[in-house]
Amino acid sequence: NMSIEDQAEQVKKVKEHGLPVGAAIGVLDNKRLEALLKAEADLIVIDVAHGHSENVIKSLRIYKRIGEIDIVAGNIVTPEAAEDLIAAGADGLRVGVGAGSICLTREVCGVGIPQLNAIAWVADVASKYDIPVVADGGVKRIADIVKAIAAGADCVMLGRMLAGTDEAPGEVIERDGMKLKRYRGMGSIEVISKLDRYSKLVPEGISGYVPYKGSVKEVVKLIVGGLKSGMGYIGAPNLEELKKKSEFIRVTSSESWERRSENIFIERHPPITIML
Image (cartoon, rainbow, N blue to C red):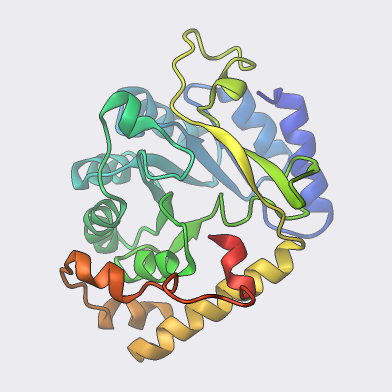
């Protein structure tokens, strides 16, 4: 629940290092937007759980009049939502409801769309207007990144896969000889109880611990390597070709058994397993 001043200061600190920076904002918060524009943010994300709403569309139109900056809107999961947000001026769309590893929206609210379906539906609309799509949630393994892009996403947000790194928030603790870091969802009871914008404590997320993973640089290196390998198998020299050449097929439960590695004794786990 960062104040406007603190958020603007964080943007300035990143800009001092010559890096592009995006900033999250809620609905109908013109003062925050003006402060972020003054701090020279490169991108604004309207960050709400349900992006296909009157307030988001209204805010999007107002924000586009206030300053010349790209705005990503979401989260959404339907083609109708994509059409409405693009018509309101969205420069990018963020896709995903209830797909995150620490999200309980589907269990608590009974609402959500399988992430791969949502990406494909939204991307079909967005591609007609040359609007990029951000896949948010559902990424538990590197293979999920490959599949998200193959389904139409232009980029993928990562939470759990980067949690546990040195650069992620939280202290490293040790339990039963294993180093861990805390990982909390924004909808978890620990977080929403501290945020004054929530009038009701209805948690839609959980908190827990993930293995300590060291430098984010090493994790990203594994992710990039896995993505390149996936592209190589498909014969895609770039991400656009990955989208064009990929094909999804229906599989049975036997496929899950076939790709198991748990039926052998693993003497030493490869680095990739720290992200699972």
